[in-house]
Image (cartoon, rainbow, N blue to C red; front, side, top):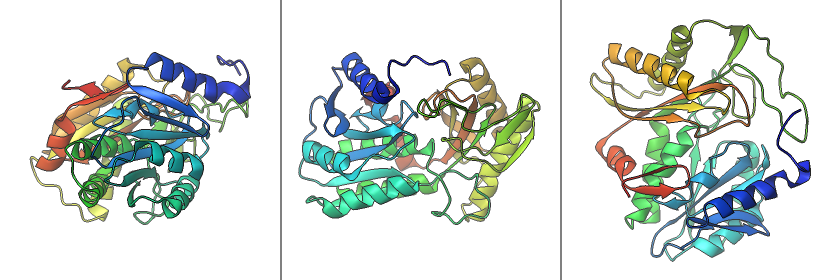
Length: 334
């Protein structure tokens, strides 16, 4: 294992200190317990709190700031944060309109955020993101992982909260965005969790893992490596088929947000190639890509690979996607 590490046990704290120092104009770090919060507390708005295991940066710390999250609670690498982190973060950022948790659908995350919700003195609600279509024959919220679509949920709901909307309205919009998102990832290599010191899974140079999870969980199938267009076609078609199975009707000229997300080791040269392939394919299906995002937004340490997320837009989602945002890793309109 070759990584920039001093001591494996200190990697998270040292990284968080570096992040907070680099972005001191935007965020503040609390270490006991660990969470990142806005450097200037927002007032009179629903407080958005998310979190999860580290190793997926910039998710979630990089999305703390105006127009997105009020706080993020990082667990250790690929490990859920604990309820005390969410509770203490809520006490710091709640401003009178309640707390909205945005939680990726993993057992540990769901359990710990539920415990925090039950122990919290503030009114609160939860959006459970489950946009991953990789797990075949899974019900909508069972077995479906929360992946890169979480970024879209955090951005859109963050905008509505910034406008002063109430807790119920923010949750309703977040659930709608989650329902209209579908994602699937493909891995070309594994990643190495520093504490383990070895690859999470073994994959040959001539193979890919279709439908991989962001922690290296197995996908739909292991298959031979092939040309990019055919890989992308399988990914896009899997998402569209999932929409159909969930009775989400796509109409000609429906507007789409296309997110091509890297897992950290795939260069932008290839990510934009994936975007080009996906956009051309969607055009042949009379679906219009009107918003886009390409880059590393929900990573998996140093895994090579990428995911595609499609979000079916309506006017409400599009307006809140376009609204100003100012975080360490997403900013426009300011």
